[in-house]
Length: 137
Image (tube, rainbow, N blue to C red; front, top):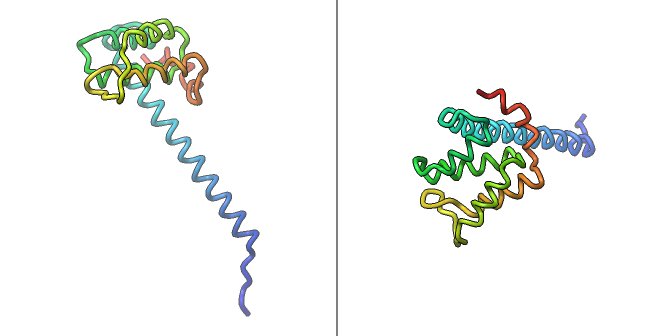
């Protein structure tokens, strides 16, 4: 006797499997973002010995750091979505000319600055992860 395939069961199992896969990818993505933000913050804090936001600001202002590293610090400020960084980001945005394309190794990227401003103003999907950032030291 041949076993009959139940299409509803196949659909149900497929939906559950895809949901688990999407959730796993989302959690892994959040973990990677968290880890990267923490690493950038700790690098800045080791150099400037202040809280994360203030250290990142000084890190970005320093010509001793590469443009790529400074652009990463701008990205991290945006991920933190701390309103304390807004004044600095507004001033930085005004000082950077418009560019056709971001070259992270040659100059500070206006796109990254504007994205960080947007995230600091409105928050982002990952900002909740950094509530305990002061305990990173």
